[in-house]
Image (cartoon, rainbow, N blue to C red; front, side, top):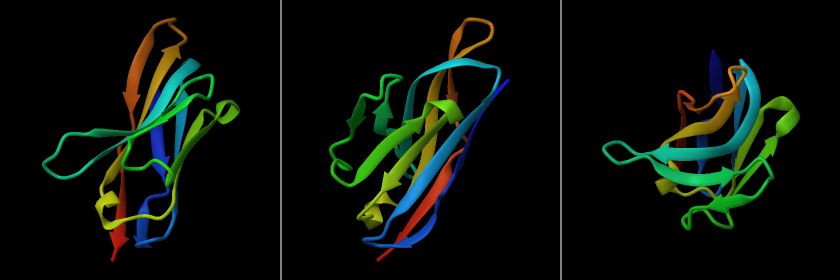
Length: 120
């Protein structure tokens, strides 16, 4: 069993900052790519940022220069530092990870989501 548990969401004023965390736990052999997605009500889930096992990163154009993804391999944790938050960033954020379990197989896992609210 593998779980991804997010934390760090909440209410912030426009222009403020939040830091999301996601910890992977369970039957883990290794973790490949980790990522953050977000989804607004009635819309498709969209990619926010990715980070590979080699720490290469990629960002959606809408968050470049404002958000930073990082990971702590020893802690099986991925972070999303969000600065200069805008009202349009106020959606649910999901953690994603490609995890090779002790079985030797790689699977995709999702967190339960954490709500970010931005007041204008």
